[in-house]
Image (tube, rainbow, N blue to C red; front, top):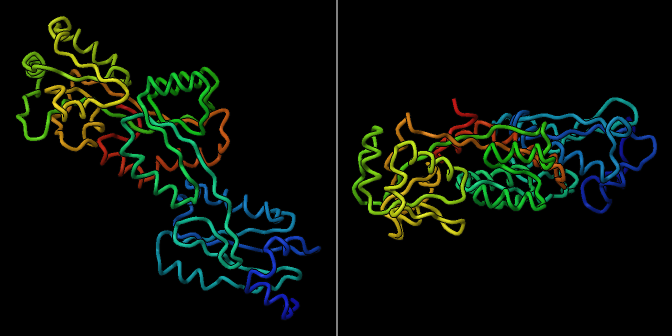
Length: 352
């Protein structure tokens, strides 16, 4: 292999020569690689490899034409990362080929460090159901750090989101009540092949922090607690709204409870109405209760009365960033995401 001259060496060390100009050198086949801090699985879930390929293509590097790309990973081991990074400039013995391993800094934005070229970040529009607010408050920034992309997240009650999407609201990914996702698939608004179960949760009772917690350990005790309450808040537009009404009918107290009910609209939540004193107790999804300061979870409804609400995800048929949206959905099934989902009062997957 011919030794690079001084001009070539200066070009490789500094930004004087644009990275893309190397790709346009006739007869050259470039062997390049990238080193990722995470595992191959996390790399696939994050969408970083797709972002890297996009950046290389934009600069004239076409795989199988003038580029051979090799991937290595450190599997989360910082010592291994250092060892692999030491291979950042490997000379190839094949004629007309040059080799360089390009390290990705930590697990942050995708960068070709040895050449100083950053891959373009994308803005991804996400619509999520209200019980998933706390989940995305934690996982959203992590996904952004891992991929370098920006998530624009709209969190709202299922009924509100459904009206907006049915009316033509654009989005890349939706994570909402499973029934809503299935309706959007039938309506041609979500790609059926991208549908994935994310999590589920049940209903619980909430009281203001520091106040006595009623006994709801059995159906009879739960019924008595509802009848003894001076007022009870419930969601008017969430995925659980219809379930709560059926619950009162099942207990045979629908008429008795009518004067006590405080339906809460999309501008507030059941736990917040309990904090403010608008209602003495409330029935809401467990993650909504857990995420609200100033209240306490009395407990989930008795198992024989419990209703589980599933949440699924899908990519919009009109998505501007479908690959990244799909990467986000895969990320929600990763071990890191599952741990957060559980910590926020949900269970991963579908109800058993």
